[in-house]
Image 1: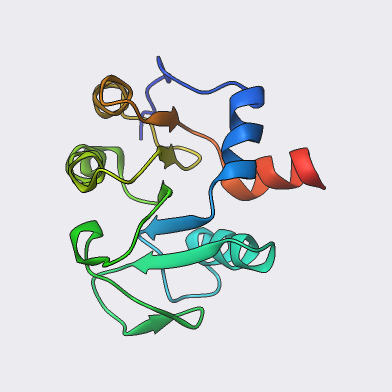
Image 2: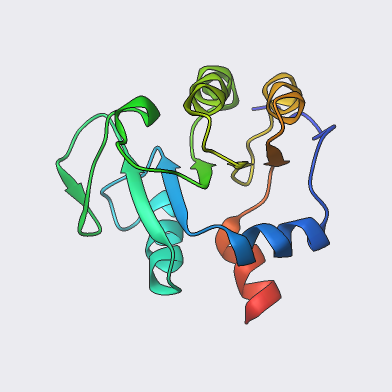
Length: 143
């Protein structure tokens, strides 16, 4: 699988600011399987105080939180989306985040780059992080 190089990306200062300021994170593609990276990362983020909102096509509850099928279904404000989906799926997810009007950050996990969607998010005033792990960056910055 070929991974594009991120043409748009936040630097570490901006990433630190993002992780200090966001409270509610919708995890797009959060697997109920504890062996999967999405589950491990979400569990970690939850353990350090973030509110996790799972988005997954099946399940009713993951990590003790109600599961939603899409960003549009979430009835409260979301600060950031943390995406664990293939790069090709990112465009519509970013469109949905922009449409909501409350999402401030689009974070694409390690191995996920979609420069077209990233530019669209930036043009709409959102911050963008690509090809980085929220858990790794949080541990690096805040121990």
